[in-house]
Length: 218
Image (tube, rainbow, N blue to C red):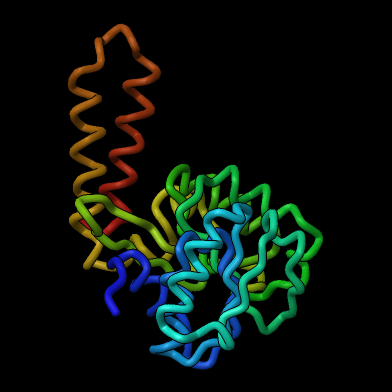
């Protein structure tokens, strides 16, 4: 079966035979892939019953009804969580993800794989504050868009502001140079076009670019 590069990148972070809870499973493609390719036990969950109807159709197509459990739930509300589970949340905004993780059940979670569509700095800060550290990070280009996928594990590490901005793992990987170059060029263009009267905005962008150049792989 074929899945997107984004979902494949998420799947590659998962070990064989893992117990997966996929929150916001969409059409269930990740769960189907992980079940077939990695012999994982998956729970496919979504808040929308209509979405889950499509998920069930896809799961039936691959004869996996007895292997993938479907649960209609608002986040973790109706999900039984144990410390062996890997919780996957992808394709949502950071605020939605943080709201899901406000559940008391987060204390039973040891492994989180998150792909947010925005505000990655805030995502890193909030999840680290919940008692996780950043175990791994991947940046993938899919359909002309970059996605940042972060694996959080239960534990504590101290991070600099630059780690929250650029990623403590991702920024050290030379393979991500093109991604950081694009960020640099985008902000340099903003700086060049910003009128000189905006002194503090210009200074903040300048300092951001200086730090980006210093600590990333560009």
